[in-house]
Length: 169
Image (tube, rainbow, N blue to C red):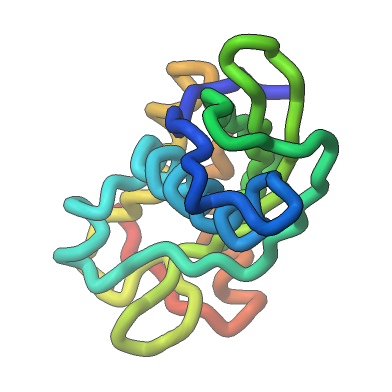
């Protein structure tokens, strides 16, 4: 298991709660989406992906609700990498109460690096573009976030799966 990283802090406001007095499920998704943006930016910041025409696309989210969240609860999300693939990353969010440490919910996520022009997953849409995801993932590994596949593994997987290849450095 990799290191847990704080990716969100906030409060459950009264307008987040439904007629039963607990936070409505739609707000869990929004909260986890914000946490995902923070977590993924540690692997490949949007400022580096945008010039390459790349972005992140969520392909799967499984939320487990463990304990109700009431209005006024101080919330924190910690995130950990669970798996890195050649085109996707999998990670788990842990939503807890700041004051009690009670675990309210978890969310397992699968996100792919996405070519915004071609509308498909891809590590790079340009033969001259640097392979930012593997480089960032290697840097992240040094910070104990995740271990990254090698560039050779990514090229092999993309070739086998019909994706676009990265030019050799």
